[in-house]
Image (cartoon, rainbow, N blue to C red; front, side, top):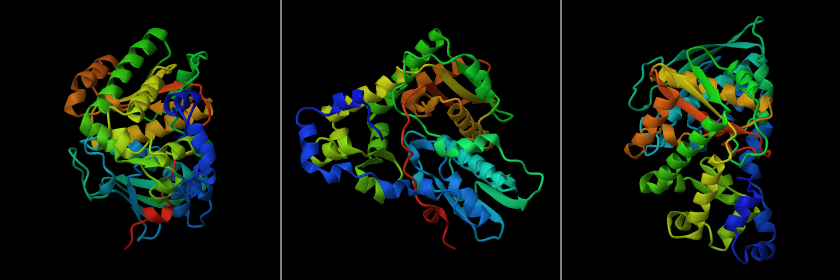
Length: 381
């Protein structure tokens, strides 16, 4: 996670800059091993691995990278959910995880098309459970060389796509016509919505602010995130999923004992209070919002929502816009019930499920998120 001046001033406290100078090389190390998959994307000769090398860069909740693939059948990929990567507290129905798997499948499809392959995709070939994911396959994909297959123009933005969790420039509005350009990327059966109207922005800033605070102030949902904190380059390199806190400041705070999973869990600590202030402040810099709605809420809908979400993210990237998902208000646990109903009344007044919501705006460039190498995501048969 890159850190802005605002976060720096909120977190450093007395003496941290001096400590950073004293600790030297250790705090300047970047998690190079964890970002290596971004450099290896597109370097494989097997067309399936080539497509997968891009797919594993797709956005997903809490950067859990909840995918495992089986390559034991020639010309085929079978995708499974990694049951060890679920989020039972904040995503009790595994809806968000399924959306992330949809993102993975869409980037895989685009990468295959780039090399002239059509993917014949069968979703949930052995059936599915709408209450929870299990060990049955999510999808079976057959790679077919097809001279008629055309590249997807959005693919060119895969390597620069990010989920931008930094503040946006509140002095720079987003033009209304940006929304119509974004909408063209959305697939059938998923409804796109968006607004850059100041009144709508204010209302959604407030609602997403409240929802984020509920998640952080609910001990079990917050602790789920804390347990996924990866603090410093060593932790990130060793376990490159979860929430990345790397860079000189976080390295120093960690080495000096000012930031750890224990201090983050202590609601009386400076680390907790400053962290809460920082993440809440981000919602207040939204310069517009975008959302996706499905008529029903089946696993197929969730996959389609993920396919559309990554396309939306690539479309915002093409326009130079930052995008951050604000999923807290869409989560299906009891403490979020009132806010969940409010957002649905607001964004899906005629019924349906709001599958994704995000803030948009212009912001600084951010580094790529850590990823497990492709080889770690191939099932051993």
